[in-house]
Length: 454
Ligand SMILES: [Zn+2]
Image (cartoon, rainbow, N blue to C red):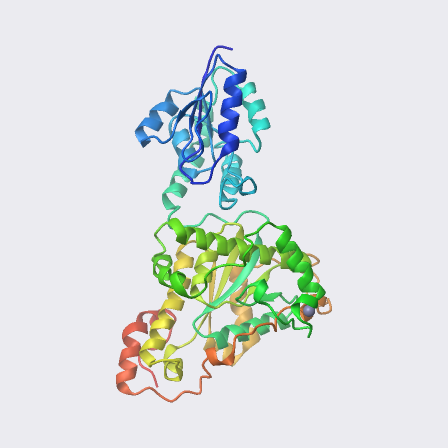
């Protein structure tokens, strides 16, 4: 084989991608006739292959167009660039287990792109050896017929890349389904949580807060002595999830950053991105462990606060569904804490977070507290089907006795009654009502509440 021009692109992620650079050097040593170039970014420069740290987009396009073989990391933008330059690239995704990325989203994205025949996925440098060896002179260049086959998918990819800042990709297959209970009134969400547990098949329920904060189990034992939670803890530790169970939540900097999260459109960067993904990864490890121990079809997160919900929506390995429980803020406003205007502002922020995740493509169903009051079971049954939650494996709903794990999940760390309004509030005076309506009316009308009140 005469020398081909082989280009390896690792992108600009700050994690080192040593496997890719080492592969380029190894190949170059064994095939001195070929011309290997690595765009190595923040990884060390190659020793024998040619190295370029970063390139302007048009330089990179020109290099890719002139290459015979293109190998990329799993970044959608890079894959897109390779496709536009006429290649069916070999993709070696960054793997968090090798410290090459903060999470596994490149692996999921690459698997998706491979399924759509947009790329050739290789999971190890050894496989990459075999694939590059097997390619002929044409390398990874796309033939006309291949281009036609993948044309529609490539357009889809272009749209996806375009939307990446705003919209999450579909959850990866095998992801744990999580039903998140969101809303501005903890009393309402706690009620829905109890209902979900009581009706078959029963769903394991997790409250906000981390495993390390968990003191007592609902079985009556301290969490450290309960077999269920010991099993969960062992699985979480074995998963290699972020060690410190996580996020500076919901206080301090993260709360200020909530405004950035709520902007929704903005791609997360820097320390906020790191914190959000760490939080989601730690929470995901807990969901996965509970699912494994219980074998339940889905896990309920009792929510209901806004920053965790938005953070979870950034993790594609969580199959997130949201049950949004809304309540007329004018019945809550006088109960505090704070002035009616402050209650209304918090109410708007909490509910706006749900709109953000809906825009990001997360399925959301809405349940009004007033319907819940009238007939809890029927109100829940009316809205749940829209979320298409998975059924129990055996399909024998109602026939099975209560799951044994129900003793161990649910009653732990329930939110204190101080955080929930009782609803037995005094009426607002005219001025208060005007201030509450001024901030809350657009959402109230959206949720079907009347303009005037009482
Ligand atoms: Zn227990």
